[in-house]
Image (tube, rainbow, N blue to C red; front, side, top):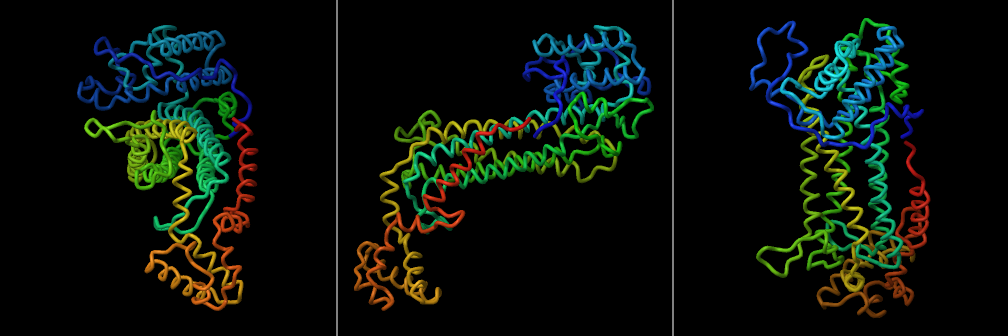
Length: 490
């Protein structure tokens, strides 16, 4: 996700910080729109409509956009150089106060945009009132949100790749381990454990492809759309976009201020990521149970019971499985909000941030903790060795043997099915069968059929691209390690 030429250092946000002071209750100045509205805002409405509890997390991006806007206003002849310098110094001071938790919010600061502008005017005087020339909070807020998402989508890409590396490490270490592969949660065929881990690497790669694709639609600059119709000033939008590293501009001001497709798309991507993590959670909960005992979760990622002294609970997988529903809910909430909105901006769009912020935080935290858990996961080789010795996992191998002898597959399927029933009735496993037993089932069986009853052979015969043979799995691991060694282009 290369966003092009680097933004000048003075326009870049520093490390994000959510530490801000609580809004003050008294001493608020008048609203920016009191020229039209004569009656003071009712205190209930003040609390109900304020977005400060969540949109103050955007302060770095709000100031970043304002710094670029100042330069565009100077270029358009709306600000003098001295005015632009004063506003720049003032904005930088506001940013420092917010970063250092010295900023004092006031009751009239209904959102981060007005809070910043109010404090800026306190610092620089009346010239602070010029900052909002040629823009509206409608295009300002969607700019902030796009800047925020650009940063967080890059972080998301890195976290996904870190989890992929964790799976690759486990795959490399356990290439020789064979496990039961399942369909319908019934033992089906033997596969290598490395092949199983690589399935999650593939899932996460699709997730990352969706992240990169969503980034393209996030990375479009809406500033200059005004409230809905554009603005009346000769502001060079392309100049502002270059300062903020946007490769493209929105082309319709109505759509520019009301578009939240990029929020919905991001939440959709996050929902799919959590679906994958929830599938992993389900497997870990099963595999770590006493009934399976295929793996042992690291103690530091589990809890005990307040009553049952023997318990070791898989809390992390269970919580991530549970949090998946929350992220799904956030995706549904934005879709529901957007479905009934006419053009252009409507206050309903204030409801885009809380679900987005919470979903991003949830997914990033889940990916981080899973990467560490997977690295520390202990594989129970002894239990897996016993598990693959039962359950008739090699039934398909016998059927394929008959096919190679000229028996139609459906007929071979029936022959081997009857052999399975024969074994079940006598409480036998494949290794208990003699050549005479096989010949009694079909004259096409010969001594070579017994060689099919080898786990290693069954795995390594799946040698086509995408198969579970050790040769193919090694090739895939080498390719993934080379690919993930390359850092994302940001």
